[in-house]
Every structure is written in structure tokens, then in C-alpha cells.
Length: 145
Image 1 (tube, helix red, strand yellow):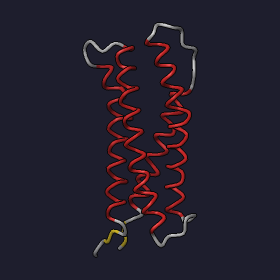
Image 2 (cartoon, helix red, strand yellow):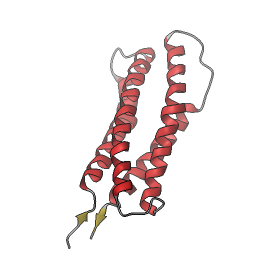
Image 3 (cartoon, one colour):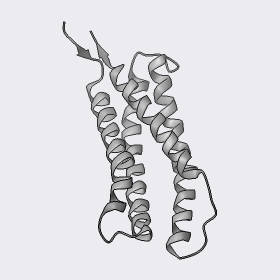
Image 4 (cartoon, helix red, strand yellow):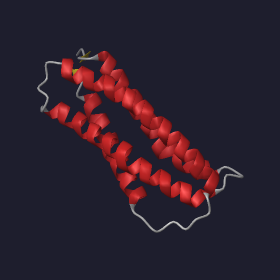
């Protein structure tokens, strides 16, 4: 049995993107707070920097993957591309709403001001889980037998 890959560059981008998300969102985000001397304000400051950088990298991957989707022979609203559209919507929501709001909350905390309770962080975690699943499905869908 021979397995073929329809779009090797897109496949590489999707699984590299997945690696970034898993490494940063599901590992670095909480491990940094376990390091000796890393206080909550320091951890939040590091987190803002890292997640803003990750967001820029994700947009680079998104551009390559979306160009690949448009150039493929697959209809835009096909099963595979639906998952890519979900990823794109999540990335837009994270860039335009979640990251700026979480950044503002972190800045308030770092400056010693009171921060009201919020579920934004849980929303961010939720969409990261959905994005991870969509990246896995999108990557696997590029393999053909």
C-alpha cells in the first residue's frame, strides 16, 4: 500500500503549525509558571510576548495553507476545506478579540490594578482545542492511498 500526499508544502505547514500550537498553548503556557522565580506578573508578561509572536507565525502558516486550498482542485466548501475555514475563523477571533483582551487584562494585572473575573481565558483554551482538532483532521485529509 502506497500513501501519497496531495500537497506536501501544505502538509508540512499544517503539522508544523500543529507543533507550534501544541508546544506553546498546551505546554509552555503553564510550564513557565513552575520555573523558580517566575511570578505571575513575569509569567503574564512572557505569555503576552510569546502568544503575540505565535499569532504572527500562525498567520504565516495560514496564508500558505489557504493559498494551497485555493489552488487545489477541492471545492472551497468541501469537507477538508471546512476545517480550514474553521481554523481561519478561530485565528481571526483570536487576533481581533481574544488576544487583545487577554493582553489588556494581563497589562492591568502587571501594573497592579484590579482585574475583574472573566471567562476569556477559557474561551481561548476552547478555541485552541478546536483549532488543534481541525489542524489534525486537515493534515490527515491530505494523505491519499
